[in-house]
Image (cartoon, rainbow, N blue to C red; front, side, top):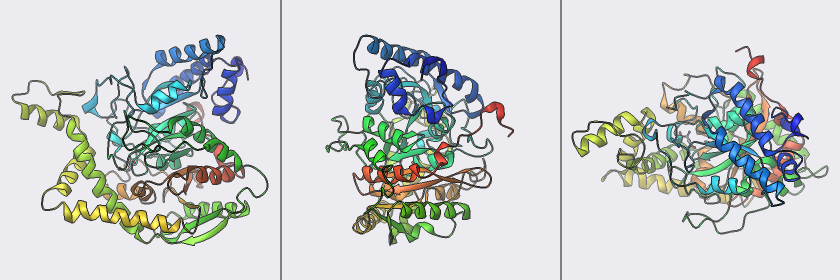
Length: 508
Ligand code: GLN
């Protein structure tokens, strides 16, 4: 691969490992890779709205630093020259960070999140900040208050990309970056990955530091990576993960060999010999789209052909997951969002007559409908007199849900289900009914409540050409099992090789 032939569209020709190896060997300049991606963003992103801010200057500066390190014989890092997009929930020093909210417009963090610092330290090049649902609340990106508007699904512009990390998933799908960061509080990495036909993982709670990640619901927030393949995703996670003294909930255990696990899945005829794949009945319930169910059942058959043993399991408290999640996440959000008062961050309502007036006007004007709805719900469930009936009860249900998983993992090594019960839906289809929108997360919220890892990857397309996603959950710190099974599935199928059309070729 030489500079002259580098083309971000050739996804298969340029996986993350190939870009990094080319740059490290001095065969490919990080600057040339960055320019190719910046040019592609310029051409393609007007129709998609993935980036809220392209940081061309910053990207060129980091790419040049990588090239200079190579020229000087210094190690530029494992991700040398790999171009990434960063969800706008990660604080980036000196670069405006808004969480796609009006209330944070103009907020330029004085510090860097641990995740972005680690990625940059490994030589990755940030191309800019990616669009999302405001404060990561949503499943469709329709809650974004970013001036660029909402993100479109690159497979069909009439359909949502999923949320809240819709900008990350769509940017990876459309080759507007080689990989991206996201956060997953109830499905926000996996659901958009499924709807856009890319790979994403929500790791074990505490595996990736939350330092410098704007908080939505602290006990449920999980930062993680997106990429086009299982191995690329594993490679990114290896750099992002690890103990961090700046996050008290970060896990001290050493980081696993994730990329190696992904590759192990590709070895031999029966790479999954001895692996027990649990199939939870409750995840194939009514309301699931027929084409999604067919694709997921076919994926299970493929895993069996790869040597895995399929084991029926039960997660009996699944039916409480959505209610439990929305009680806990709104309670935590109402408390986390109390800090945006016009004094410390971003926007401040002008001409306030008193302190209270400043608070109410800043918050009234700055927050969109969904954060307001959640602040009200959360304040209600935490109210004296209701706390036990709602929040306390939700905590008890959370324990039962986690216990279900612990019991299932005595019978199997991973659990395999669909990621989203439906393919991408149309803009406007669920916006009028918040409950319908909340139900989009029915298959993804339980792993957040239990803190277990869950990988999402493509496993088919509908007749209309929309991606379908598979979900592989593991026990706490079982990321390697997820990557091994995901790697084996990917090696035996071609779904991850399909790419959406470019703007010039699109008709709708
Ligand atoms: N869609 C879910 C919600 O609206 C999950 C969001 C997330 O994971 N950040 O809360």
